[in-house]
Length: 189
Image 1 (tube, rainbow, N blue to C red):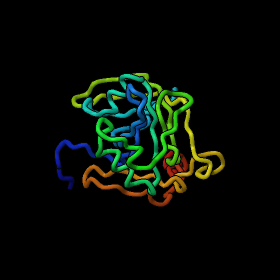
Image 2 (spheres, rainbow, N blue to C red):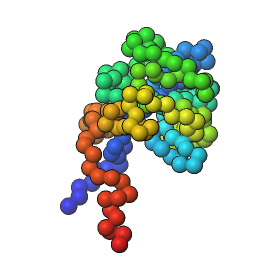
Image 3 (cartoon, rainbow, N blue to C red):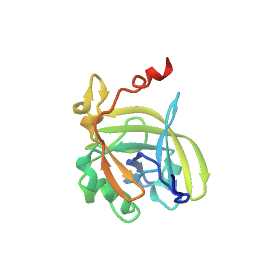
Image 4 (spheres, one colour):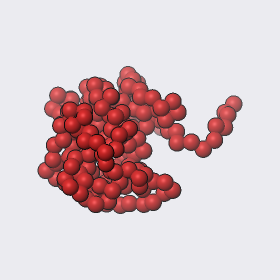
């Protein structure tokens, strides 16, 4: 039997997206945003939801661009910090020692040390309660060459991690279970 636990912000998996932006003075900023995911395949788009109170929200509204940076497990401490401190008060890159790199496609930084980057231009915003839903068209995906397998990003090499909103904890990616669009083929016949 299922037990009701009420309306909560729980879904699995919940990503760890580090959103890269510049402020109006050109200072790079990074923010940990778990509310997001792929939202369209043609054109390729990703969406994130941010509270208006965040520094990153204002940066995206001003520049209309952002990057989505996927950290590996190696950078869990830095990624967590990006969600706790505000770029209004701190230079997060100086504090973490990570390297902001100016994107050649959008006026936003990406994080050199993170293995997977999405460079996005803002194509849509919508207000929902406490959050603004930002949809960015993915103009390019950059992947560190050491994390590619046959030209594609390899999740087992990247080692991204997930956020668990129930327990406010991070979890690693588990083992491969099956091939998608294959394991269920017997049920189609």
